[in-house]
Amino acid sequence: MPAEVVQLHDSPALNDIPGQLRQLADHIEAGQHGDVTAMMVLIPRGEDYPIMFGWGDIEGIHHPIIQLEFAKAYFVNHMTERT
Image (cartoon, rainbow, N blue to C red):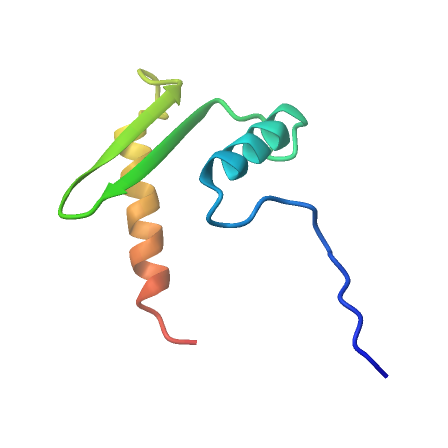
């Protein structure tokens, strides 16, 4: 009996960055990620420093630099643990 492929989600390919960003914007507008008050985007640049964009509550307690440090600590801790 041949296998049947069932698509679970209709979404852009992972390497379609503009499509993924559009989908994320749709999800934010639909409230799927809660009340989003700030957002950061980090774009790697090979051998140079990455580009960082931040929107939203820039001067408040959710300053993008603080949030970036939290994200960095989270990823470092989770990337280095063995399961």
